[in-house]
Length: 111
Image (tube, rainbow, N blue to C red):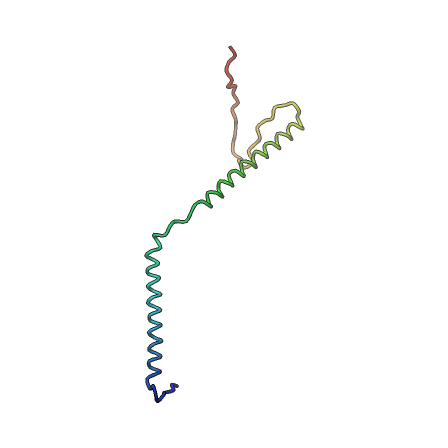
């Protein structure tokens, strides 16, 4: 139900047309912004690999330090059980395939 004013009889028509105009402008600018953003997006600067590389480097060195500590503990335990003997190579922890080390004397022959 519309209330008509005697001073401005066309007030409701102007108001609704103004609202529809504002809504249409908002929709158009929203679409325009989306379209422009889609055009600009491929030219955006790529994300940095620095955090990923630093995580990989820290994980690698954590593994190196952990294996060194494990091997040292293995040697100390072996020396406690077999004092004065040469420590054999430690078996790999996470490799269950065949492994063999050929020990050769690579020292220079005495002259």
